[in-house]
Length: 150
Image (cartoon, rainbow, N blue to C red; front, side, top):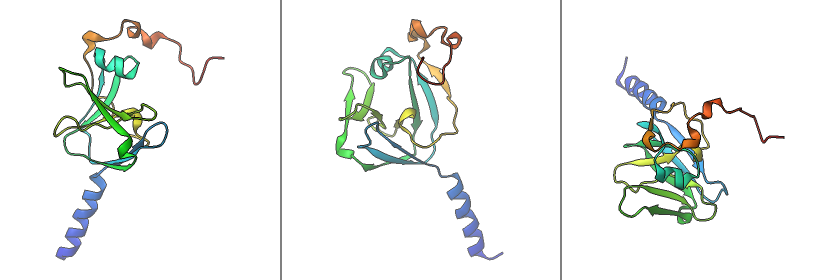
């Protein structure tokens, strides 16, 4: 087998293992692309995440190597860091949707719900369970509906 065939096969393997994800905000003003792999997928139950999502927990993907490219609306993205903490959030100024954050050097944090592409990764762990919302304690027993109740 010649060298060029070997190089071609290696490039094929690299293309298969490289992952691209796209995402956007609710109003469509911001769109982005993430190229690379996620290292972890955490469901954070801390009080800060409860406040900034308005729900029981935040679902965030973490990567130390993936690259983020804003495709549109980069000037519409703003960030908030809670004083005295490492807790931060990037979001659309127009609709408030959570967006990827690069506020911690060397770490890309992507809210799972802002992705438009499917992810095959299952959550790595629930974290900060000591802060779990009391009303979420037995949520697995609550009836499940496909849409709004009638």
